[in-house]
Structure formats: structure tokens, C-alpha cells
Image 1 (cartoon, rainbow, N blue to C red):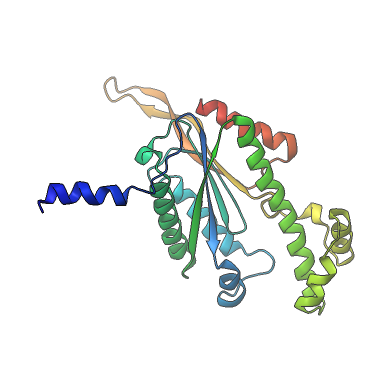
Image 2: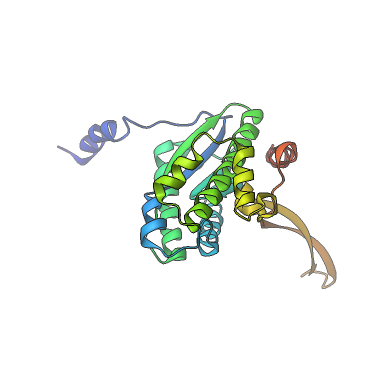
Length: 254
């Protein structure tokens, strides 16, 4: 069988499961650490409930995935997850989900492993959203999830520090409201409101324009040029103000 004939025959099977994100839809990639519970609790000596070395490895991973060939306008990380918002006109690899998933999971896994010095693997999913309102809702959802996780983690580990077993600490938190967890943590000597914002809200990444003094190479005179830089925001706003931040990035994306 001639190669061209064989190639055409096999391409049908290779592309059978291809799926693409429709043009005009917003597109978010969410990456999650695979088996990170075992990695962080058994294999790495980390501070509890939050470790700055792990945080910095996640920051490095987000920066890398925002600069590995895709048009990403906003990145967000909390715990062992990363969310990346693509420019709505990004057409990388024809918006094929299998390509986006395989490349991003590979890039994130490799970068985190280098940054942390220990093998870390990420899976990836692509989330298409039809409206800007749903994009805002998505990132509010992840922000509020960060808040809930941080509160529970602080309660759990402070109880463990007082001598509670894994089961005792887990059972003690079951069914407790946010207010009850805040009070429990306060009784254990921690005011949740005073903890670092990055622990409670996650960390955001976005590009901003700034003016830089340069020299006109033709006229040899000083001039001001506009440049962009990636901002790492460890003090993200909450609630409606966070919605406004995400929406402002979408407006710049338009």
C-alpha cells in the first residue's frame, strides 16, 4: 500500500476523537495536581497548612503556562490548581481540545517538577463558556473555593497541632458553618481575617501596560515607549471588586 493511501486511511482513526472549542466562545483551561495529596503530605516536608516553597513553585508554573505559546489573558492559582483564561480570539492548534490538554498538562508538569525538585504531574480540562458573565462567575467560584479551603485547612491543622488525630480533626469539622469554623480557629489562637490574602483568595496573574523611557534609534533622542509586563497579584480583591477585576481583563481582551 502506498504511503499516501496508508496515511489517509489511518488519519481517519487518529482524528476520530478530535473535539474543538467553537469560535467566539471563551475558553478556560483548569489544571489540577494529580496525586498531590500524597506528594504534599507524604513525600515533601512542607509547612502546614501553607508552604511558601510550594506556593512559589505554583507561581512559577502559572507564569510558564502563560508564556508557552498561547494567548492567556488571566491566570489564577490556589492550592494545587491553576486556571488559565485564553484570549477569545486565540486559535492555537485550531482550538483542538486534545492538543490544548496534552500541551498544557505537559508544560505544567515539567515546570513544576523543575521548580519543586520533586515529580509533580497535572491533569487538564478545557471549559468553554458562552458569555463574559459566566467567565466572571467561574473565577468568583474558584476564589470562594480558595477561601473555604483555606479556612478548613487552618482549622484542621491547628487541631492536629493540639494533639487531635486525623479522624478527630476531620469529624470535628463536619457540618460546621463558616462562622463556626472562624470561631473555632479564633479559639485556637488564629484570627482568619489577618492571614495573608494569597492563602484565602489565591493568586492572580495578568498583563499590564507601563511606560518606559528609551532612546529613538533613528533620531537619537529620548522617547517614551509602551511595554507590557506580567503582574503577580497576591492581594486579589474579594466579592464584587474581584468581579470588576476579571471583567476589566475581558474588556481589554475584546
